[in-house]
Image (cartoon, rainbow, N blue to C red):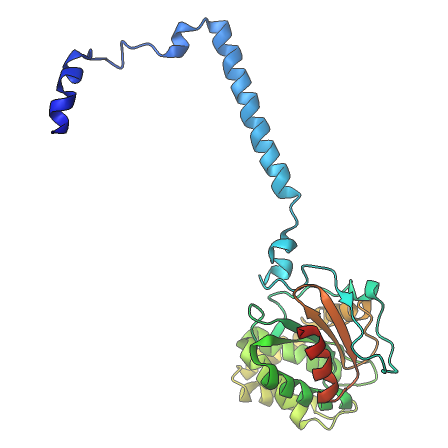
Length: 282
């Protein structure tokens, strides 16, 4: 049966209504009553909007995986220290120290994929520290061994008695800003492979040519380095490490997405690092 046949009698019986002549339901209500009805609806609308804004304003976005703005979930919960090396003669920072670890952000230098990683390793390091040079090789082996399970975050911690470490950290940041994350890691790997460490192991005059070698415009790099624009960033990263209990290099804080953590002090062996990671991955 066609639709027009069903509706035909109804349509013919309905009066034609002009928008000009038809009165709304509110026209039938006295003006004072209409005013109060409108006022009530207005108050209810504002109250609803206010409640929604209050709810969103008080929401902890970190619990939704937005800690640090990387969407990885790392840092969303306070770290809980676990003892995976009971025979160690090193003193790990107290739990309240690890609570102060600055969250991982998009400004960090990451080797690996934070969205897939089960563990983040935040290393505070010094380009002129001989133990950091040794541990850098260990960390390269860790990344190869654990694949996407581990993400490596590098942060600056130049020691005052290593004369070139501060400028090398600033230089690495200039490279990152001009050439991106890949250039940063190439630059970092190169310094650690070539420095003889202990303060003056890599000449400051060689930083520009190295920047060019990893694909960065040398003139722009030199302008960036000479300006000292990254000195505060380097100092802030070191302060964040100190607040977290790091008092020497290398110092590496391990974090899982569910908030468990541990710390590696010094240039520990690959076997020791793997034992800590395996305990946290269980």
